[in-house]
Image 1 (cartoon, rainbow, N blue to C red):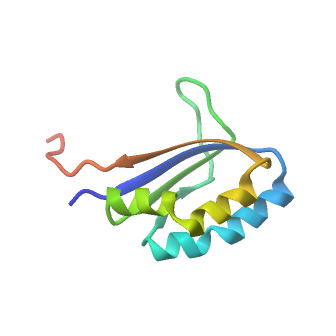
Image 2: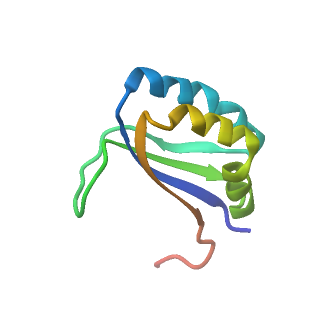
Length: 101
Protein backbone atom coordinates (compact mmCIF):
# COMPACT_ATOMS: atom_id res chain seq x y z
CA UNK A 1 0.00 0.00 0.00
CA UNK A 2 1.35 3.41 -0.95
CA UNK A 3 1.97 5.92 1.79
CA UNK A 4 0.34 9.33 1.95
CA UNK A 5 2.03 12.69 2.24
CA UNK A 6 1.32 16.27 3.06
CA UNK A 7 3.48 18.70 1.14
CA UNK A 8 3.35 22.20 2.53
CA UNK A 9 4.87 25.49 1.45
CA UNK A 10 4.47 28.18 4.07
CA UNK A 11 5.28 31.82 4.71
CA UNK A 12 4.97 32.49 8.44
CA UNK A 13 3.74 36.04 9.06
CA UNK A 14 3.63 35.94 12.88
CA UNK A 15 6.41 33.65 14.16
CA UNK A 16 5.47 33.85 17.84
CA UNK A 17 1.78 33.10 17.22
CA UNK A 18 2.73 30.33 14.73
CA UNK A 19 4.37 28.46 17.61
CA UNK A 20 0.90 27.85 19.05
CA UNK A 21 0.09 25.90 15.86
CA UNK A 22 3.35 23.94 16.11
CA UNK A 23 2.47 22.94 19.68
CA UNK A 24 -1.15 22.11 18.82
CA UNK A 25 -0.62 19.89 15.77
CA UNK A 26 1.25 17.08 17.57
CA UNK A 27 -1.77 15.13 18.84
CA UNK A 28 -3.36 14.96 15.38
CA UNK A 29 -0.12 13.90 13.74
CA UNK A 30 0.52 11.24 16.40
CA UNK A 31 -3.03 9.87 16.11
CA UNK A 32 -2.64 9.31 12.36
CA UNK A 33 0.93 8.00 12.38
CA UNK A 34 2.59 11.04 10.83
CA UNK A 35 6.34 11.39 10.50
CA UNK A 36 8.14 14.56 9.42
CA UNK A 37 10.50 14.00 6.50
CA UNK A 38 11.12 17.71 5.93
CA UNK A 39 10.44 20.38 8.53
CA UNK A 40 11.97 23.67 7.47
CA UNK A 41 15.66 23.40 6.77
CA UNK A 42 17.95 24.82 4.15
CA UNK A 43 16.73 24.81 0.55
CA UNK A 44 17.45 26.31 -2.83
CA UNK A 45 14.58 27.17 -5.16
CA UNK A 46 15.86 25.93 -8.51
CA UNK A 47 12.70 26.64 -10.50
CA UNK A 48 9.51 28.60 -9.84
CA UNK A 49 8.42 30.57 -6.82
CA UNK A 50 9.31 29.52 -3.28
CA UNK A 51 7.95 30.12 0.18
CA UNK A 52 10.16 30.54 3.22
CA UNK A 53 9.27 27.20 4.88
CA UNK A 54 8.74 23.75 3.37
CA UNK A 55 7.30 20.67 5.06
CA UNK A 56 6.82 17.05 3.96
CA UNK A 57 4.92 14.78 6.34
CA UNK A 58 4.61 11.04 5.71
CA UNK A 59 1.58 8.99 6.75
CA UNK A 60 1.08 5.21 6.67
CA UNK A 61 -1.44 5.63 3.83
CA UNK A 62 -3.15 8.22 1.66
CA UNK A 63 -6.36 7.54 3.59
CA UNK A 64 -4.61 8.32 6.90
CA UNK A 65 -3.22 11.56 5.45
CA UNK A 66 -6.70 12.66 4.38
CA UNK A 67 -8.26 11.54 7.66
CA UNK A 68 -5.74 13.63 9.59
CA UNK A 69 -6.52 16.72 7.51
CA UNK A 70 -10.25 16.23 8.07
CA UNK A 71 -9.97 15.38 11.78
CA UNK A 72 -11.31 17.59 14.58
CA UNK A 73 -7.85 17.45 16.17
CA UNK A 74 -6.14 18.94 13.13
CA UNK A 75 -8.91 21.46 12.49
CA UNK A 76 -8.36 22.79 16.03
CA UNK A 77 -4.61 23.01 15.39
CA UNK A 78 -5.12 24.70 12.03
CA UNK A 79 -7.27 27.35 13.71
CA UNK A 80 -4.10 28.31 15.65
CA UNK A 81 -2.28 28.84 12.33
CA UNK A 82 -5.02 30.83 10.59
CA UNK A 83 -4.05 34.47 10.26
CA UNK A 84 -0.42 33.79 11.18
CA UNK A 85 0.82 32.10 8.00
CA UNK A 86 0.07 31.77 4.30
CA UNK A 87 0.21 28.14 3.23
CA UNK A 88 -0.21 25.91 0.21
CA UNK A 89 -0.72 22.31 1.27
CA UNK A 90 -1.49 19.25 -0.80
CA UNK A 91 -2.34 15.76 0.38
CA UNK A 92 -0.93 13.27 -2.10
CA UNK A 93 -0.67 9.53 -2.53
CA UNK A 94 2.86 8.17 -2.65
CA UNK A 95 4.21 6.11 -5.52
CA UNK A 96 4.80 2.44 -4.85
CA UNK A 97 5.78 1.25 -8.34
CA UNK A 98 8.96 0.50 -10.25
CA UNK A 99 11.88 2.88 -9.92
CA UNK A 100 14.41 3.95 -12.56
CA UNK A 101 17.11 1.34 -12.98
